[in-house]
Image (cartoon, rainbow, N blue to C red; front, side):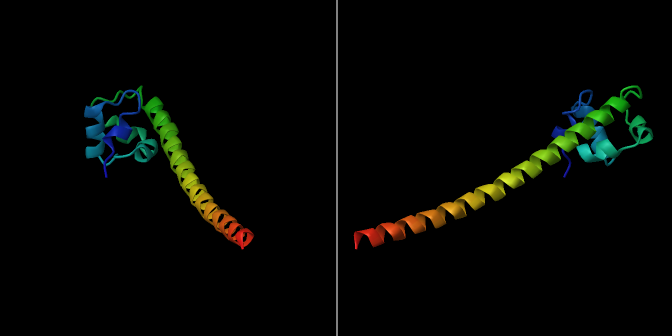
Length: 102
């Protein structure tokens, strides 16, 4: 799915250039980061002098997105573990409380 919003995070890429990139198959930060200078030079509105910086920014942003996704996934795993730990603790506490009452 095209991600014009992600592409516009790169300084020098607005909505119009993002649409042109998407039309040429460059629809994500990953693809922009991997695009050749020659392919990017064909995009109307991109200056050849800006391409190295645009690619560098795309690489940094793509990596940041991946790290955020991995961090989020790790937090979700940790949260589910906490939920399971809490259930075990609560069950143990409830059982111990019942035994104390009898």
